[in-house]
Length: 335
Image (tube, rainbow, N blue to C red; front, side, top):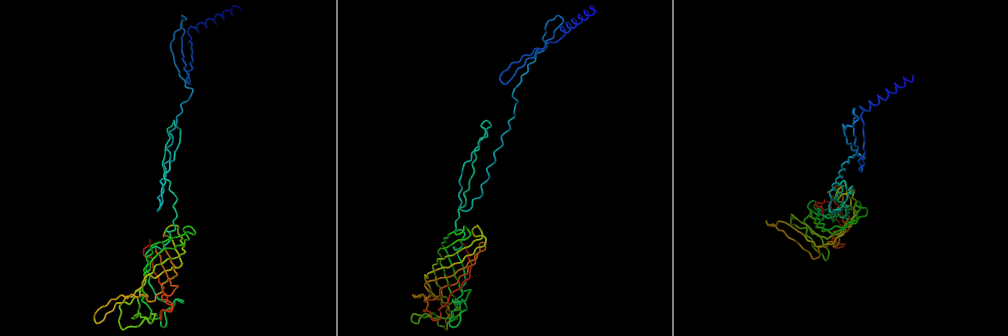
């Protein structure tokens, strides 16, 4: 038994010696430098003479921090185009600074335009200023009925009896923003009446009267000019100037600047054209007061005026007391 154990021990020692002779040894060296680790690996093989022989050396460098790919910063959004500025609007330039990471170089400066809110101007929405054309008819001012009795002599040709208005200045006050306005201004009216019958205007004392004549007048026209000031209450359905539906009503006051009469006729084969001026102004009323109604659709405005004061001074016309004028027209040009 002892002999067997001894043989086994010898075999074990012998096999260990062979493994050492023919085995391989590995040495590892680690060096730490900042965030990196350098590993040197040496593999050595032991030969049968028990001498070390280096057969391979490997160097491994490890980085403690994984490389992180930094994405490119997104481009800042482009500044939106400013809306088109409406009439009489001003632009104001401001600076907007976008601040980012300095290392990523995304600091940028962008300039955009800031548009001021439109300033409301009431005058842009009223429609007094402009040039108007209307047609006149003389009527009984009490109820605006047709002329009767002795007043029939004043019947006029409607299409040949015209009113021209040149309204130069306009001033408006907003009551409810763009929708309800109070408007005034200054304008001029040039009014005429072309009569159907042939008569001359003559004085009996200080009273004017039409007297029939044997002349056949191709033109028998009385004209007068006035300076006027309106007071109108206006309603606009649209927030844009001269758009939508427009309605206005009020009064117009005026003062007579001048008057005259024009006559054209033929006598003994000759044509005559004469202008008659009268220092008393044919007893036309020096003052004028009219009611007015105006209806506008987009840029078209229809106008109706009716006298609140008679055309002639009270008691100064033999047959013309209580006669007033009614006119219908349209605005040709708006200012």
